[in-house]
Picture 1 (cartoon, rainbow, N blue to C red):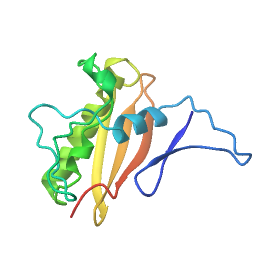
Picture 2 (tube, rainbow, N blue to C red; picture 1 turned 60 degrees about the horizontal axis):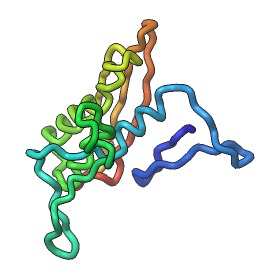
Picture 3 (cartoon, rainbow, N blue to C red; picture 1 turned 90 degrees about the vertical axis):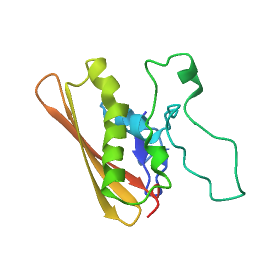
Picture 4 (cartoon, rainbow, N blue to C red; picture 1 turned 30 degrees about the vertical axis):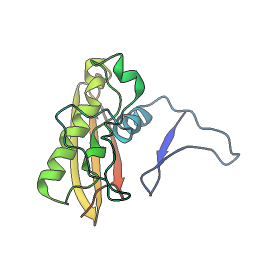
Length: 152
């Protein structure tokens, strides 16, 4: 199934004009899942501070299956930047987290290189250009918008 990023930062299933689900054999859905699902935070990661209803127990998020396989975790730690300021340091951390989330593609032999560029496109919105070097010498390129995720 093909996933498409939504303007509000969510993800939806792609459908054709007849309303049927669209299939995909490429890397785009793998990139979207890798970047826009929450990877479990590391023990030493600072968690975003909640703003509503006072203090809550720490939520390290992540997929439950990660508890069984610490070597191949799913998703990214981009969610940790939810309450961060729009700074160069935050942009660099986003690039690091994106590369980390996509590294499994190199390990599994689907791609040979990962290049991530990121820029603040508007207040509270970071656009990331993902360029993957393919084993046949070609490239796959897509843009992922982390809109509405980062604080100013």
